[in-house]
Length: 312
Image (cartoon, rainbow, N blue to C red; front, side):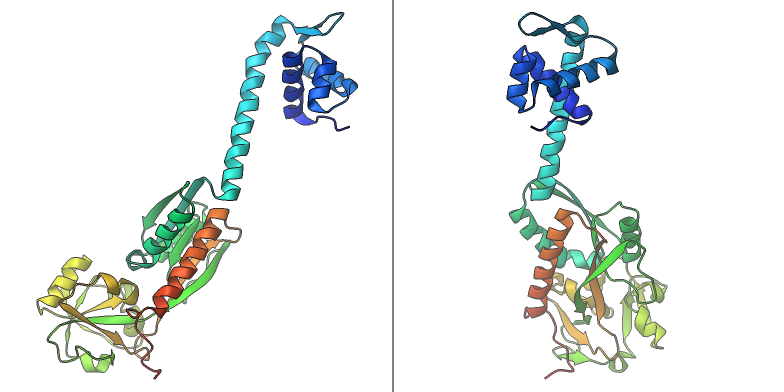
């Protein structure tokens, strides 16, 4: 027959004996031998330094130290039961917390669509989201402060130790133009055709913007306005004050009086978008990663996601 072991086993036996009023009845309830139950009670009594049961001709009853210990043993049992239930909920995706980070344009469609489907399948899991640059989220993942992040890692930057990247899609860049612009309605445009345009950017330091790869390649846009807010930036485009870059993931959120044209990938390479997780992700992070992959595939196949202009 099995025998109890560990501190939890001692309290389990103690509670069973207190409930049944005898070693024999407790042994029968627990599926242990009577001698095993007697030894476990003796071990616990040695640890607390007091007799917990008064041995009677027929059965046992709690001593004063036993009565003092009883509510504490019950509390230990209840806390362990709650812990087991919570751990089981994590395993079965019935509960828990998932901490998700993402860069801003991923929050226009990719992340919210994946989160909506995740919530439909796993309503018991609370999801918190943090927005910020990819390098921030990679650091938070490495520090154990996030469970999953959607990032666009810069090529020269090494992935932090302990973090795994999962490729989701390659994102084209679009140029937002006024509706009456000469290039409006085209499938793709070359940057050389826009060399004389005035650009609306989000930062005076172009290396910290979407222009980083083309600036590194030698293209310097003529800056007309520096506007941080996306709505204000697109409003300026619609008013004819300049043109701006828009990531394809944010295209669905662009206002109707602005025209979008794909920047030819030979001029501006597609941006790599990945999910980042610890090497051993949580059950919830694995499930969310699955929803991100499904959503990325849907976006790539949608009519609103630009096709590579190099392909027929």
